[in-house]
Image 1 (cartoon, helix red, strand yellow):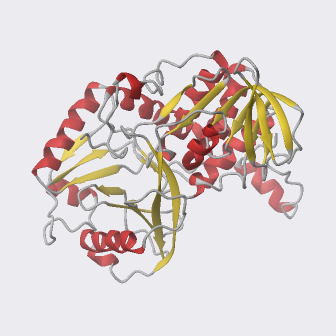
Image 2 (tube, helix red, strand yellow):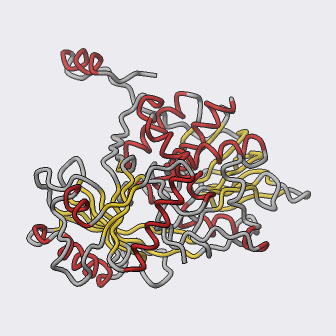
Length: 416
């Protein structure tokens, strides 16, 4: 595998940047694999990488209906944090953050992880109580989080308007280790590293069925390129997870909603952190290209559309203009939507299914990107060992039957 370094870049520059190799192969599918992963987003690619690296399973195929990283991985707002309330969630997301911190070195690929801090604003008495509860809970779980007064909020993020708005800022919870990463670089880095370990990444190959044998166990997948045999199939298909799982006769407790985001024209560095506001529901950060990356809440209706309703984005921009008045004259360049899969308790499912050989990683709602390396790591363990990793053991399908819910409402670190 070709390596990336400053010295290598200089050498290639003198040669007109000739000789760079494709970062991953474009193979045709083999007749049989040990494991098939459905979905070449961040979670699926990470799972394949850790299957090869940690468990020595190299005969793996990642099958993608479209192009690598073209789903929710390429359609999110790139926020990384672990300040979730409940013990189970905090353990899962903190595991991911620890992997984020060394991911560029591990993959030999710059995923542009930037620990610029994630600041969650409080606008009323309930927010203050809720976020202070989060701070205490996080500290008990070894997760960094601290409470800031309004004046400290302003000092940490000077562009914020803390008083002259409909919902004045009463304080905020700050996770300094939180931040952002570059979404496409994450997908490319995992793809390149998985490919170098023998994993086949098969793009433009739609899964049309999951074949089960007489005993009920998985035998492989039907695709637009023919039947591919495998004794283990992991589904990591985000908003379409319920559709794929239905092919195996498994009904999932999921609903899929559009989730919208947009970016402004690029400007010079003006916004030093990630700011989230649950009360007025908007969040914002500045990308390395200078764009203001703005996220909205989920639309109110279920849909597989990637467009969403206009009033959702206009409401979000109204909130941003109140939070940061100096951005009122910024022009928006583009907006888009993803399809998020939401469980009843707003926490993911990373588990074996009742079908032998079938595993699923889904239900991340609005919180999938931040969990990418941690999710892939524990999902790979679950597939390889046919039993959950201790971190994802609580995130079963059966918890909805048994009542052991993990109620992280809308994956926004707000418990209802």
